[in-house]
Every structure is written in C-alpha cells, then in structure tokens.
Length: 507
Image 1 (spheres, rainbow, N blue to C red):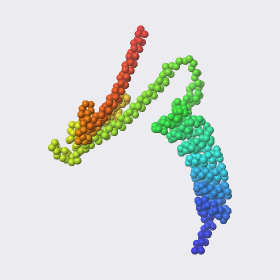
Image 2 (image 1 turned 180 degrees about the vertical axis):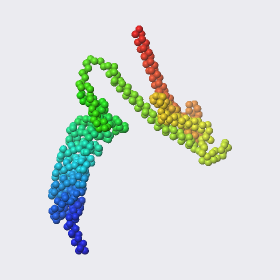
Image 3 (image 1 turned 60 degrees about the horizontal axis):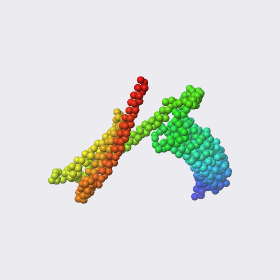
Image 4 (image 1 turned 30 degrees about the vertical axis):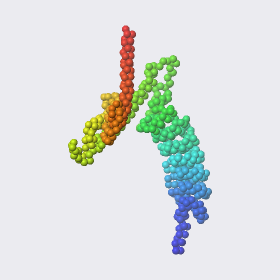
C-alpha cells in the first residue's frame, strides 16, 4: 500500500502528471488548482506553451467560457492570447464562435491584435462570429481593429459575403453600419459577385431587400460573366421569393445587362466561360447631338410604347391560357376518377350473391339499380359515360396538343367540353339520388303544376338552379362573341372604306 502511494506521488511530481492536472483544471475552470500547480512549479504555464501543441489551457478556458480561469492565466502569461492550436485558431477564435462576450472582452484587453489572426482556412475571429450570427461579438471585434473587415478569404470573399452565405442578416446590418463605405459594400469576390448578387442567387428576400434600399449599393453591378442581379433572378425557377426579390430590384432601378448603356469611349467588359475578358468597343466615341426641340417623333418611335403594351397584352393572354389549361386538366382528371368509380360501384351497390327472382336471375356483382330501375339505370349509365369520355377527351387534348389549332381556340374548345362534362355529372347525380332515396316516402307536393314525390322536388330545384347558372354563363359568352364579331366587321368595313376613298383620291 505504501508503494502505491509513493508511485502516485512520483507520478504527480512528473511532468506528464502536472500537464494532466493542468488540463483537468482548465476543463473545470478551477483557479485554486492552477494556483497549487504554479506554487509547486512556477514554470507550469511556460512549459504548457511549449508542450501543448493541440490546445493551450487558454484555448480550453475560452472554449468553455471560464472567465476567472482565463483572467488568471492572462495575468501571468498574456502572450498566450496569440497561441495557436493544430488548426491555426487562437483562443479568440473559439470564444468568438461560441458568442462569449465577456471572454472576448478579456482576450481583446490582453492583446487587440489577436483579432487579426487567421486560421488554416484564412478566417479571422470576426469571420467565425459573423458566420455564427454573434452580433455583439462582431461589434467588439470591429471596434478593436476595424481593418479586419477588409480581410478576404481564398476566393476573394469578403466578410459581407460570409454573412450573406450563412444568412446572418443581423451581422450584415451591423457590418454595413460600422464600415458602410461604398467600396466596401460593393466589393466583389474573384468571380465578380457582389453581396447583392449572392443574396439574389440564394433567394434571400430580406437580405436582398435590405441591400437594395441602401443608397450606396450598386444594383446594376455586373459580375465576371456579364450578369446583373436582375439577370440572375430572371433566369432562376419562378417562385414567390424570386418574384418578391425581382420586384424589389426593379423598384430600386435594377436593369438587365443588355439594357445597361455603354459609356462613351468604353466597351462592355464581359468575361466568357473560358475566362478571357472580351471588350466590345463602342464605335460612337462622342455622344450624338441632341435632336431639335420641335422635332416630331417618327412613326417607329411613336409606336414603341404601343408595341410594348401589345407585347405585354399578348403575354397576359398566354399566361391566362396556360392557367386555364392547367385548371381544366386538374378538374378533368378528378371527374374521370369519379365517373369510373360510379360505373364500377353504381348507386345502391351490387348483389353479394346469386339470387333467383321471378323476373330473372340476379348474378353476384351485378348492379341492384339495373334490376330494380332498368330505365333509370340506362339513363344514369349514359350520362356517366358521357362525363367519363368528355373528361378523358380534355386530358387527351391538353396532353397531346393540337398544332393546327390556335391555343386560345383550343382553350375555348376545352371549356365547352367541360360544360358538357359538368352537365352530365349533374344528371348523374339526379338519378343517383332518386335511386338511393327511400321508396316508402309517399309524400307528394306540387311543383310547376305537377304532383311529384318530395325528393324529386329537391332534385328538380337543384337542377333548375344549375341549368339557370349554365344558361347565364352561355348567354354572357354569346354576347361576348357577338361583340367580337361586330368589332371585326366594323374594322373590315372601315378598311374597305379607306381603300375606296384612297382609290378615288388617286383618280
């Protein structure tokens, strides 16, 4: 037993034992343990700076947020703030990444130059604080050494690019506020991308909206491939965020690269995929003379706004046609499924087993409605078949397309077929209700001068409302067609009249 105690005492007195106890004190943040170690060996911290290649006690304390332990360490060895671990990170890197504001304050007080240290990836403590969204730590680091905001990563990315890529809007706003110079805000990476272009490519709406509202932001900056931020969002898949970003850019005066005028005597510098910079010289070295004040615009100039409105009108028509086709496709698919289900499972169900009746044999799986109401079953199946075939026709026409028919005419044809389908579905519903209604209800009422069962009155009222609505819609479309025909006729008459007048004037 005494030998074991002696071996333990020797182990504690050895260098390895002291290093182990120093590491344990760093993990627990025990200042008393550190004091005892230094009392036994005043060179404890000096040896730690030489032997602790992975991380120093200050690295551990900064990582875990032990303020008192870190303060005591820095009191006796302040140069430990510049020590690096195996990945080139200082204790300030670890404290900044974890958001320990007081720890960062202690380390900066010991040596403010620690915030200029880069790790093996080229990142300073400010980069880690921004990427983690630690706004208060970011404020302290920039205040200690403002020049750290100008440090770039390997691909020329600035600290603003790091904030945007990690979607840290709070840190981005603070950086722009503290060092919001025009050159800094519009700085580009090695590919010519500004932070606005990066936020647009990542579809960060809030970030893009904030940037375009800054007066120092150049919204029409061109990247290495000759694209502006508006070009990027216009070539991306359309969604709600993309549309909102595009609207913000347009409001801020953003333009496509092809609409940006070239400066006199300078060309558009565009970088192709091969990386070779192409300069397209502007042949007009001096600005053209201004037109006379009383000059009358030519016919081409006067028609330009009209052409723009006509183009927009055609685009709106195409969009309307596409939306109509998509809606008809969905409705037709749903109706086809309903019609198929009604055919295989008619109202009233099917016979579970074979039965013999005086009127004939009833086979298992056959329709009960066909046996009890043969006339109604025939009409029911006819209406259901029309609905099924009409809906399949809509699906077929939409999928295959008809190249020799105009798109708008095809859309109207699909709508007419859909009207037929819905009418057939209404009639199918009427016969289904009459089939499943109880047969012992002998209550009769007067409807339009005719006695009929109460359930029939409900069905007839429903159908009457449906056909009234149907007739109203058809009437409106007929009126629109007549107006269109009258306009066409008037235009033809006017053209013929102008031609006749022109012929007589020549004579």
